[in-house]
Amino acid sequence: MKITAQQLAALVHGTVEGDNEAVIVNYAKIEEAQEGCLTFLANPKYTHYIYTTKATAVLVRNDFQPEKPVNTTLIRVDDPYATLAQLLNFVNAQRQSKTGIESPSFIAQGVEIPDDCYVGAFAYIGSNVKLGKNVKIYPQVYVGDNVQLGDDVILYPGVKVYHGCQIGNRCIVQAGAVIGGDGFGFAPKPDGTYEKIAQVGIVILEDDVEIGANTTIDRATMGATVVKRGVKLDNLIQVAHNVVIGENTVMAAQVGIAGSTKIGKNNMIGGQVGFAGHITVGDNNGIGAQTGVPNSIGDNQRLLGAPAISALEFARQQVYLKRLPEIAGDVKKLKKMLQDIDK
Image (cartoon, rainbow, N blue to C red; front, side, top):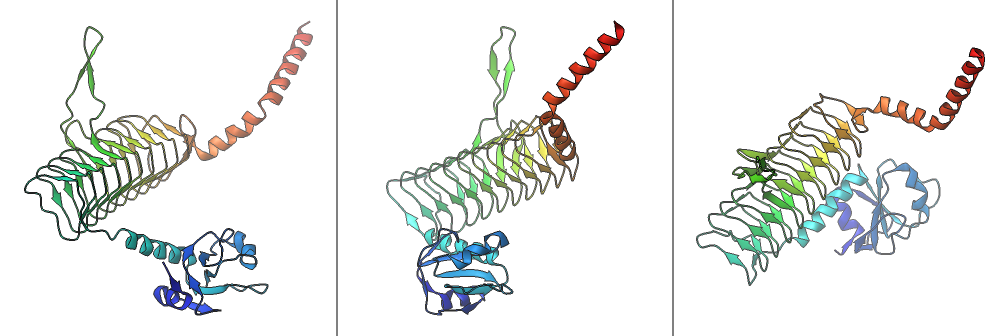
C-alpha cells in the first residue's frame, strides 16, 4: 500500500490536519509506529503516545483536541477504530485478488469453476462440487464430493471440507480447519469393545461465518451440525456432532462443545469453556474463560467457574478463598476455646 494522507482521507471521508502529501506505506500500533506508518487513537489511555509517536499519520476523532503540539499529520474521522478496520479490510481484499487455477491441482470432471475463482496448487475438488462466485481455494485444500460453497468463500491452506457439507456466502475458514470429520460415535459391546456408529449427517455453515485455524466441526450422526449466520469461532475449537450454534455468537480459543448441545444467539464465550452434551444455552450470555457448563442455562447470564455459577457469586467466593488460611486459623482458635470451656 502506498497512499498520501489526502488520498486516504478522501477514501474514509475524513479531513487532514497537517501534511496533505505525507506518504503512508504501512500500519502499526501508535506506540510502535515508525515513519511511513498510519496508526490510530481510539482509547484515551493511549493519548500520551500521540505526542511521541513517529507515525506519519494518525486517525483521531473529529473532536480530539491535543493538549500539546503534535508532530504528525492528523486525519480526523467519526470513529478511528472503525475506520482502521475498514482500511485493513480494503488492504486485505487487495491481497486476496488472485484468480485462476494453479497447477498441479485436481478438479473432478464436470465441476464448473467461475472465472473469478482461485484454486491453488495441490488443491483437490471432488465430484459434484458447487462453487459460488469469487471463491478462493488456497493450496492443499481438500473439498470432498457434493460440497457446496457460496459466493466469496475463502478456504485457506490445508482446510479440509468433507463430503456433502455446505458453506454459505462470505465464509472464511482459516488454515488447517476440518469441516465435517466424523462425530465421536461408538456403541459399547458386551465384550468391552466399541462398534463405530456411522456418521451420515453433514455440517452447514450459514452466511458470514468465520472459522479459526485448526478448529474442527464434526458432521452430524444424522441431520446436520449447524453454525448459524455471523458466528465467529477462534482457533483450536472443537464442535461435536449435531451441535447448533446460534447467530452472531463468538467463541475464543479452545472451547469444547459436546454432542447435541444447542447454543443460542449473541453469546460471548471465553477461552477454554467446556459445554456438556445434550444441554441448551440461551441467548445473550457472557461466559468467562475456563468455565464449565454442565447443565442448561437461560438468557442474559454472566457466568464463571467450574461448575458455572453467576459472576457475582464467583467473585464473592474468590474473596473467601483468598482469606481461607486466615479463616482456618480462626476456626482452630475457636475450636481450642470450646475445648477449654468443656474442660
